[in-house]
Amino acid sequence: TMKNINIKKINNLGTIGKIVSVIIKVIAIIAMVISLILGVTAALAPDDYISTKGKIEFNTVTDCSSPFISRSNEEDDELSFKIKAFGIEVEPERILNEAEILGLKIKSESQDTQDSSNPDIVTTESLTTIEGNTGKLIKAFMIGVSALIFIFSLLLLISISFAKKLFVSLEKCDTPFSEEVVNNLTRFAYSLVPWGIFSFGTNGAGGGVGVVMVIVVVAILTSVFKYGAELQRESDETL
Image (cartoon, rainbow, N blue to C red; front, side, top):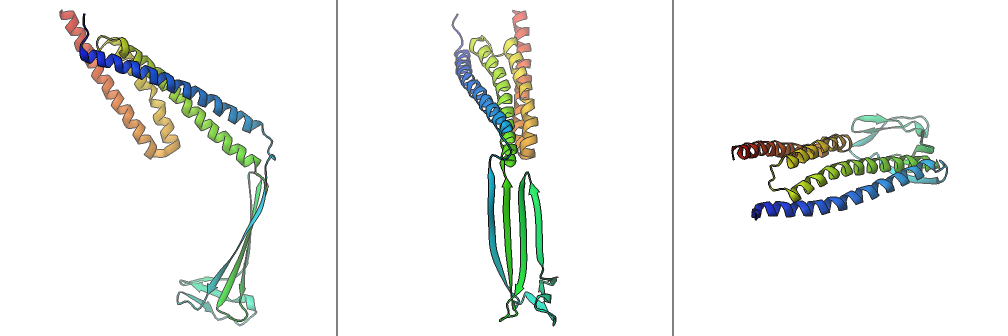
């Protein structure tokens, strides 16, 4: 018997989908292998394989004659003056902050001085030095990125595997409401649930909503196909 033209289109779409899903599966497997190699390589690398040393120096000049900035009256030594900016008094001082992040020592130093020739001019000298081994920082970054790529590829591989089974059943079906198509569509819908969880965890609500909407649409289509399968079964039993 000749197949309905619409059934032939569904079969052709199933063939195309099967080929595309195979290509995506190969890409996902390659991505998993590469991410695993990168993660293991980064984990085994020594913490001190990269060293960083440098400094950032800049000066800020404040003109206290501005209508928004004024000096309170101080008659003691040169460094006892105060600056009032937008009604907030700020005393000039030597600020020294130190921090260490994953083996990287960061030291920030700031010194306010008053211009001897023009008391309204205050110069803030800032110096930030960075020194240490950044291998641990880069290792943590590389391991994190590798883990995300691996999880993404794994979820993709799982979903595409179920999608491939769906496309195969569509490729050879005589009706899209067959039990095999409906079952494969249901499994594919379930395989998308981890995507929603992963998207919410990595992208927040903004990225997760889109995936959830796709899952909802697929779930609705699954219900429609299940109902269609029931009607098809009743029709076959009647005949």
